[in-house]
Amino acid sequence: MCSQYVGVDWSSGEWVSIAYTDESESPSVAVFEEITEVWDHYSTSARRIVVDVPIGLCESLESDACSCVEEDGELSRQCDDLARNVIGSQYRSVFTAPAREAAKLAAAGADHSEISDKNEELTGKRLTQQAAGIAEGIVEVDNLLQSDGDPEVLVEGHPEVCFRALSGTPLEHSKHTAAGVAERLAVLRNVDEYTHGDWRTVAQELGREEHRVGLDDVLDAFALALTACAPKEELHRLPSNSLYRDAEELPMQMVYRSENELSYK
Image (cartoon, rainbow, N blue to C red):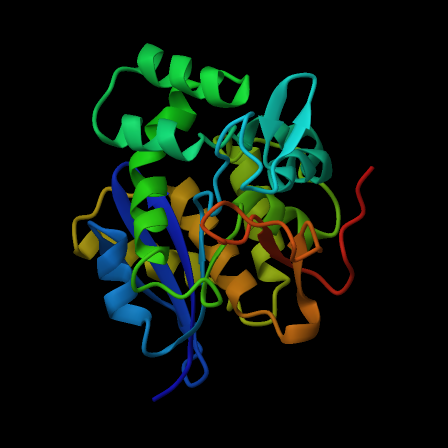
């Protein structure tokens, strides 16, 4: 069986996956309703699956069980702080990851104010609507990695960090603008595994299957998939220290692909 390298983007309640293989030049695309379906589909063949949701969650200000950073009475994941640092003007795209208890509350259907109050109680930080909105996906991945999932295979990546690393410089435009789409396509075209027009092939396949996936989500999934393809010497993590783990011993790191490690202040 050939090896697969997979990027998975959480998109409006669905999981969009793009996979490259050792034996095919063209990537494949699939859409799943649950992350367990993604794992069942790829786990026997995937060398690496890079997913765009936080893995490794904070507990509380009173707990010493996780490797979160406390500053001025607020608790945060260091990988989130470093990600904002390295991507420059796109720093707002890195949402504050909810604490585990707040994420579970959100996934259970609580309203935003209740979720944000709980997160502030636990970490000193409130949550945006966007951060609370991805909680369902976060809890799905968290549950998977505490049961059948392998944290050495299923790892966290942030698309903007991946694009920044692949580009060599911070991106200037939002992914929601035409200029931002052009900028990201230019980055993809410079990656070895990407063939000119791969995004169009994937978009056409999604159209035939009548999936309503945005172009920005497709490009994000490409950045994650191409990061998954990284040879060992080009795969790095934010932070690079593997000691950063949560109370369940899940790593609190984002992977990226670059010839050299990203520098940060």
